[in-house]
Image 1 (cartoon, rainbow, N blue to C red):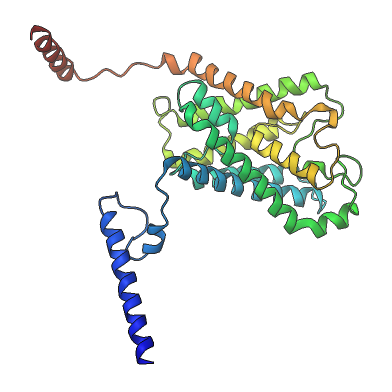
Image 2: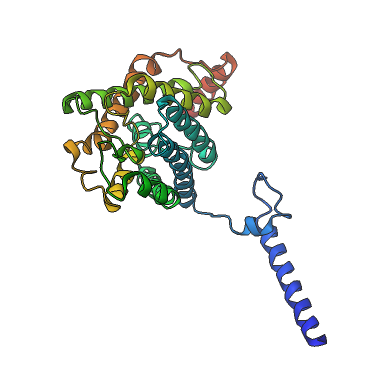
Length: 318
């Protein structure tokens, strides 16, 4: 017993010294939202590489978005809830929470058209686009797997194991977006451009500090309300396919669990997957060309301008 006690004491002493050395090496970091002395293990698990942190942030943010949003669709479809606005409102809340989750580490894009749209107008580096999109798509697919595992008994009871898109027991819209049978594909293309363009235009209106000065803590709430407005007001033709991460991974997952026509139905899959990027880019350029580049230029104080001129003249005479 004495030997065991000695060994345990030595082991504990070693661990304490190990954590103290770790904290000492990291003491020059900026303060975080938790006390490193109290949560030394969490501090030790900190990821140092920025692109890994950003990937993880987009993954978990999109995961949370999809778990809440798809669960709302379960109530809409499987429980016979006819209040479509309730499902749309839940999607808005899911977006707010997803944005808040990823705000500090990645900016909380949770949508590929946001990432590529910002990059197209110089508001985001293209080098970061791949791992952002990968995190968004993987987070969405993983969320679908969790929602399916949690609601599989209800789904089997509703459709008897016969997975179909439409019909009395159709459950396709539980997973992804599909067009109204009466709407031509050409109109779906136009509708997707309009919806995704409105989304990106509205996001830039909200986040541009030089335009309205909306506080950062209101961004997620206003963007959530913006999505609710777009889905409820303009999304009747093809369910407002404005997020490829919300659309394509669930479509692939639906195919894997028995929806044979999830990818082939009316050859619609490519519209929310690719056309939404075009619409988002159009919305970004529309904002920049109508608002962004025309904002008054903020001039530096006269004293700073005079000092800069004197410094330039001095450098020129040398």
